[in-house]
Structure formats: C-alpha cells, structure tokens
Amino acid sequence: MRQARQSRCELLTVDARLAGYQRCGRHGTPSVADGLTYRVACPAHRAEVARVRAAGLADRLRWADPQEVTP
Image (cartoon, rainbow, N blue to C red; front, side, top):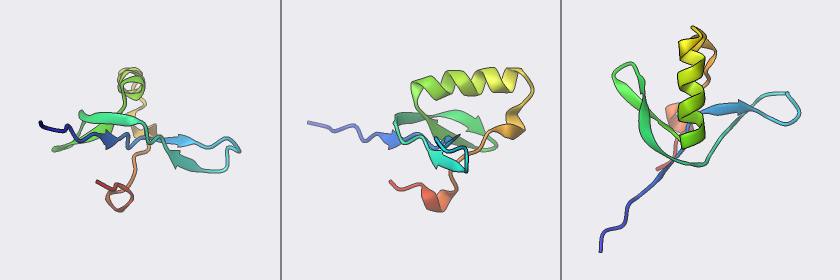
C-alpha cells in the first residue's frame, strides 16, 4: 500500500483581526507556478490565484517563506 503525502497550502491570508497574515494550511498540491518552482495551493486558492493573476494583481499574493513550509 502506498500512502500519498499531502502538503499544506502555502498561501498567506489576512487574519481575522486584519493585523497580519496567516498561512491557509489546508491540504493542497504543488500546482501554482512561481518562477522555476511550484507553490502548494488548496483547490479553493488555486482558483483564487488564477483570478488575481488574470486581474494583473499577482504582486499582491503573499506566500509562506521556505522556512515556514514544513514537510
């Protein structure tokens, strides 16, 4: 039996107090191109990232830093 290891969504979202960012953390796959690598995004955020990029606002997306990403 082979177990599929899922990663956590790396997109940062504004926290409830609107004071900073928090990591989404839902399960996702490396599916959002970011330079030469792929970012992990959950299904809901994959669609959101596509809409933001289509609107020309890709520079407003915030992703977790590599040290915040735990396997």
